[in-house]
Image 1 (cartoon, rainbow, N blue to C red):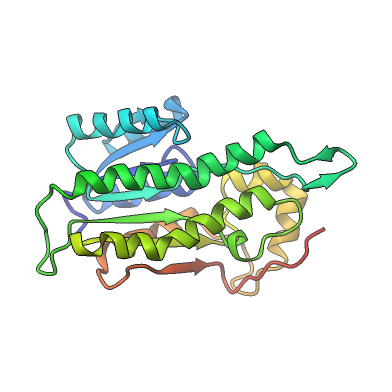
Image 2: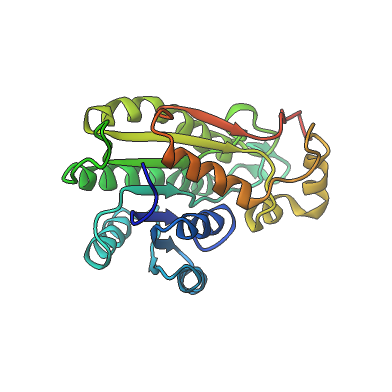
Length: 256
């Protein structure tokens, strides 16, 4: 599907991978709705890409429904949806600090997994009313963001790994559900990328320790490199039901 003139929603679009994707989509002619819990940062990115900013808490179904209604009223129904909203917590399931707080586990799953599903289910339902835009009958595409931690999570990341494994697991059945309507679903699993969330979760020392596990290129990924892949997924209609590792051949060790 061509990107130019299409409406695109980017959740978590105020920073990191989401902001880079919003910029890249806009550079190729898409009309952008930046959805983020941080309205001020979302507005900055929206102003930069000549788009609109809409506050949303993806863990709240009422907030998600209202945000999509705002996109629909101001721009129209989106054919491109990038789910980049996410959070994490570094905590072992049991330690001298006590058991992992159940509420924080639920919060990570609510944002990373349930939030992604909620945006997909509501946006997909809107796409059904759209006319196809390709000879193949394509109506839209979802690019969801998981993580390599969803395959081999390190110590202290049970909540985050579980949430991202869920996003990975729902990719193929969701793509099969939506295939009769010409709607694709693809998930990207980034490795180590230089984003505010990655540095906040690991700290500078931890970030460097993880970088030491990257075979080649031996550096953190650039958000623009993630954005390039996201845009290619939109344009390449044969990519469907796939989970793509974008990690420079990295595999996580125990990382105690």
